[in-house]
Image (cartoon, rainbow, N blue to C red; front, side, top):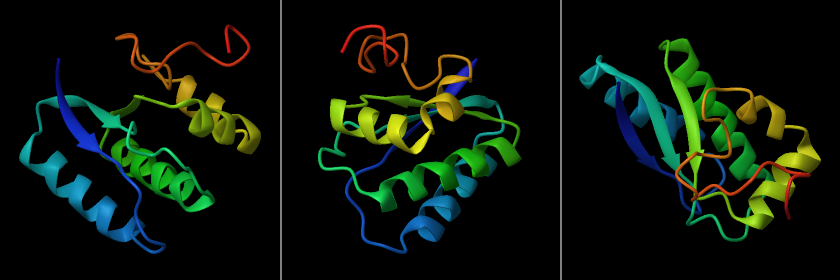
Amino acid sequence: MESIEFCLGPLPLGAGVFLTDQLAALLTDRPDAGVVVCDVSAVEQPRAVDLDHLARLRLTAQRAGRTLVLRGVGPRLRLLLVLAGLDEVFGAQAGGLWAPDGAGGQPPGKSW
């Protein structure tokens, strides 16, 4: 199955609509791609707005019948996702938050 690569870095408040529009356009152009791989390795100092961006991206992918998988989740973002209760939302998908390529690390509670 083909995938779409999508990168998320530090963005200003209110960038969520821009991100979802950009992802929706990519999904339209690539109807064969069933998975969106979102590289979040550039998110070194995660903020609440970054969680909003990720949630919007996940919803956009889900509405298009695709799966969003995070790659490159750093320890701070991982902790923020756990504290917000979003680790299960992302981790429940195939490949989930903890991408199998090793870039995402292990699930919380397994090895910090």
